Image (cartoon, rainbow, N blue to C red; front, side, top):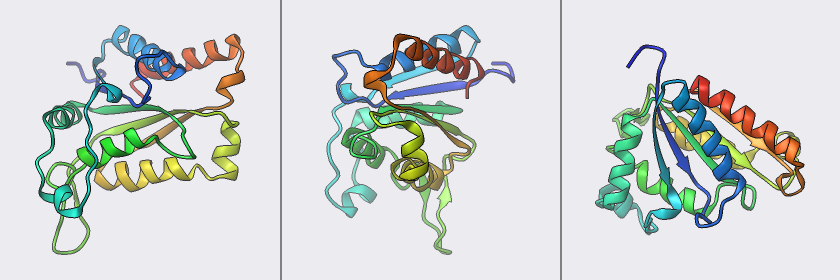
Length: 197
């Protein structure tokens, strides 16, 4: 692997996997351009995983992750850059994505407690991009609602375990977007994929 290429993991977080959505098209466009540029690529469709809910602190800290979660952890460990694509539901990530994050970013894999109270970030050296589709205008979510759901994911989860930088691509008014606008979004994802950004 040359210095310019990266190992990219795409996490597709749309819960409705059997039906193609804009999230799938955005992930596909990114993936095609990334592979064409010579980057290594892996992809996980969260909707195809069996992700049980964690129901207590002891289970989170000491429980054994399911095999599919361990495989996802191995893919994250392998990656230089993680792209997480999902639709905005009730102002934040779908429950499927949150359940995945709780299962994956456990102590011992994602962070290590320390005596000083500030955990050691075990996933440092990786970057991330959150790609989010939504029904409202993207500017409204970003500036009026302060993108609170994404800040929680980007800063309080990914940043907490060492991802930096964490960047955002927001696509709004998707239900009424023209084909021309959708094509522009796909081209933007291809541009990002070629750069592994």
